[in-house]
Each structure stands twice: as C-alpha cells, then as structure tokens.
Length: 319
Ligand code: FAD
Image (cartoon, rainbow, N blue to C red; front, top):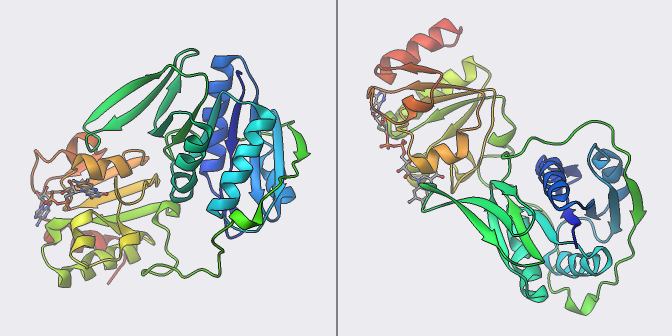
C-alpha cells in the first residue's frame, strides 16, 4: 500500500483552490512512498470538475456522480468505498470546514489514525507529518507508525498544481445507502458581510485593535476603497462586533495569501500571523517598532495610523 487518495473539494459549482494544493501534497507523498496519486471528485457536474482537475501529477481521477453539494453521510460512505477500491496508504483531505466534518468519521470507521491541519508531509515509513501546536507557537513533526492513515492539509501551505495532466479518468459507481443519509442541503444562506471572501482578494486592508473605536473603522474602509482593496481584520475587531466574522484573518478566522496585505494597528500575534504569513508583500502601520508584525513586514511604518491612513487615502485619490 503505497498509493495516495485525495478527495477534491468544490462549492456551489466551483472547485476550491485547496483541491489543487491536495494534488501537490499528494504527489510529494506518493513519490516518497513510491506509489500513485488518485484524486476523486464527488458531487454533481463531476465530468467538468475532472477536466479541470486533470493537472500534472495526478495518475487517476475518479468521478463519483452523487448529489450536488457536500453531504457528510454521502462523503463518508463514498470515501470508504473508494478506499476499498484503491487501497491507499494515505487519504488526503482539506483541513476545511467540509474536510474536518467527515475526515474523523472516515478514520474512525476504518480504525486508522488521523493527523489534522498538516503543513508538511515527508518520509516513507514512518510517515512524518508537520503541524503547529499550542496556538501556532510550536511546530512539531509527528511520526506515524501505521500502514494507513488520514491526513488533512492546511490550505495555502502547498502551491496549487497546474500544467496539463494525463490522468486516467474513471467513473466510480458508489453504492450509497440512502437510509444512512440523515441530512440534506436545502439551500445556502451567506454569512453576514455579504458575498465577500477575503481569501480571494488581491489586496487586503486589515484593521486591528489600534483603531480604538468602532466609529474609526470608516477610516480604513475609505483606504480600502481608494486602493480598490477588501477590508479584513484581526480577531478583536470581530469579537467587538465591529466587522462580521467572515472578515477575520487568522488561526480561528481565514487563511489569506493576497498580493498585498496592509496591517493597520495589528500587533502580529501568532494566531493572526498564522492566517496571513503567506501574503506576497506585507505592509505594517504600527506605532510600536517592537510589534512582532514588523519582523514579517516588507515595509513597516512606525507611526500613528490616524496620521498615516488619511495621508494614504489622499495619495491614492480617495476622499
Ligand atoms: P493588539 O494585539 O492589541 O495590537 C494592537 C496594535 O495596534 C499594537 O501593536 C499597537 O502598537 C498598535 N496601535 C495602537 N494604537 C495605534 C495607532 N494609533 N497607530 C498605529 N498603531 C497602533 N487573532 C486574530 O487576529 N485572528 C485569529 O484568528 C485569532 N485566533 C485566535 C485563536 C485563539 C485560540 C486565541 C487564544 C487567540 C486568537 N487570536 C486571534 C487573538 C490573538 O492572540 C491576538 O489577541 C489578536 O490577534 C490581537 O489583535 P490586534 O493585533 O488587533 O490587537
């Protein structure tokens, strides 16, 4: 058992970027173990998804035409049946809301170990999985001495695979026991904050506790507007109810990798950094030259945000 099986993720008709990151991580692992990488996609419109997923590094793509959107009970059954078919050493899933919803159930049914939120996978036998612990303060490598296991990977830790692939695409007929499907998706309701997905933004203007009061948020909103950027924040801003939860960057918020991340009045606590350290260019505006965010910043402005932000708005033609 040297093969790797990954299951792609999609939502409302679009593949999520992490599906392609799974291919990169899965390929690394399959090469280390001397096996093949199998990728499965479950849901509606699977043929179109398979075409998109046929990138370099994938050996086989299984299309499983079952339902439209993610469903815990369906995915658990399909994953189990795919594992019986493929007999992989490792099942790789995203460490996403959906991935974490069914990965433990699959591991429990198979009676195999699970390691979640991996940021690195290496080695042949035993497999070495790297993950963070204690609120991202410590990076640890876990040796898993088991022939089979389930691993969920953190999004944005691997580059998404690309390039034309030559995978063998096969339709997989799953035998889903409908009596075991206890939930159905009846519709979608967007969380507060509208359709904004900060993970998709090229430029993020991110605000932290340095903004001091809710009424001052308008200042950073104006900067975001002038830069055609999206507004995000650290956790205290969300905890205070000044911005909706879907704007929060960090360990308990979203992981973002924009081209430019402007941290305004944000200290750079590890839990915040865990969500934005992959940004291409980081700009920090902070009065404290010793704030940890400065260690990460490409450009650090040690000054009062209430002076700097209006100057930037003016510079970029805002009001
Ligand atoms: P502070 O740490 O208070 O920093 C404010 C900064 O503003 C300071 O550096 C200060 O120098 C600067 N400042 C003040 N006034 C001005 C001014 N006028 N001009 C310029 N600079 C100024 N946090 C997250 O962000 N995201 C998460 O997902 C997250 N998850 C967490 C999960 C757990 C389990 C725990 C325990 C914590 C989590 N946190 C998270 C909280 C995290 O530990 C920090 O408390 C938080 O990130 C701090 O936010 P901040 O930088 O906005 O505030």
